Length: 262
Image (cartoon, rainbow, N blue to C red; front, side):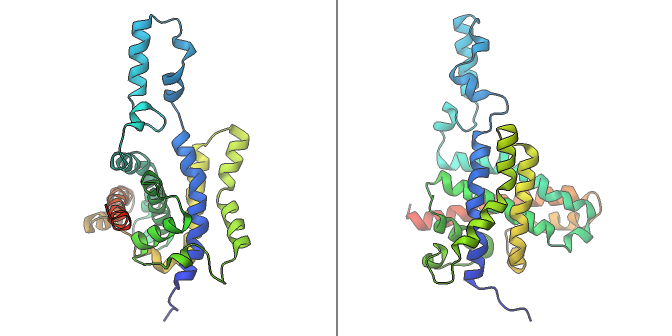
């Protein structure tokens, strides 16, 4: 029988994971693929447009619900959570579902669980940020409770114990964010390739606690049944991951409500 994974080991894996999600989430928040925010503030291309029409166009752009716009500023935490689940969640669920092309064979490997847990962990950190939860230890406790059903001691989660290796944590965090750093230096922004590779690195880091990954929220039984089939299994896995993300959001709301008492 395998030795039980300790809370300290879980925390040692989750702390660099949570730290690495910071720059990835910042990049996703700041991403402006259609130039919406820039145009909403001052668009030189619209400078020669008739003032009344220009104002309507800019108002339309600023009403689009993406980070940085006036519409986003007017959204509450629940609405922003839905945005993360429905917009960013679609992308991460698709990446997670790709191993489903292999059907039952892929389901016997930990790759999909690792990517799925990484996607869910990324979403949890985004939700935490929208609720004002910024402390690393608090986010670690949130992930441990939602994903692995563990209640972690705040002292251990904060890394304030004798076994905590700060230098190893720094090195692991740097490795996890290497793709983002390279994309920033080369392209000046986040690229789809860097995002996908970073998600893979995050998932790979969770393989250190493989047994815990089986506890994460999942889709319905019929999602898993379809996921066992070759080729079409990817569709079942995709919708299963989307369902799992919604369950994660609900569990996060429960934890955050208990934490704040509201």
